[in-house]
Image (tube, rainbow, N blue to C red; front, top):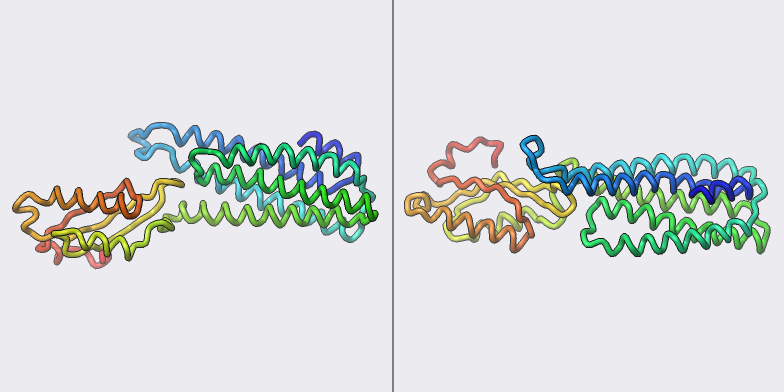
Length: 275
């Protein structure tokens, strides 16, 4: 990043300066991702009964906002330079871009091998991939300037960087927002959940089904399950509960579920909003 700033000032390149600004957000993003990952590993407590696992989601959301801000700055400056392009040293762009492609390519390869591709890790990877693509664009712009003397190639490359940054920001904000707003996990089809649970012997009906994501790889589900009164009389309710939880774990990869078993005779006492 420091090398980019120095060379950008000397060469007059907005593409390098824009990417240096983006890399500054990368520094914060990667540091935040590492911090969030360490928080997520902390055990549960009386105050945080699920631990701090959702810190990963907050980190991803912050990364998305940081990308949006950096994108806006780059677009405004690129518009000015398109109207009045200053002289740019193409050879400097090529040299720095080649180094950037090498460094970010290596970083992206390392991150892609993470054992847990959480939204937090994905956010860090998107930052690095955006840098990789940006350097490829800068390399192209440098080659065009050297070969043809077309100075507008530099701000055009900057707009390419901004487009990639905007795309990454949208992906992060959409995914993290879905989790923070308690959206249903993509891997869980509630109609299928009701169907599968309803096929368990002794189950008469399933209602008040809710599914959300605690963090990237931890879907959670709760439901009210109506069972025959005899299940409570003959002691088979526990076996039914085991079958229900095995069904959720096996078919939908939901390991954390809260199921309220209700006798059929209690159904009339349910509140309307529980339908």
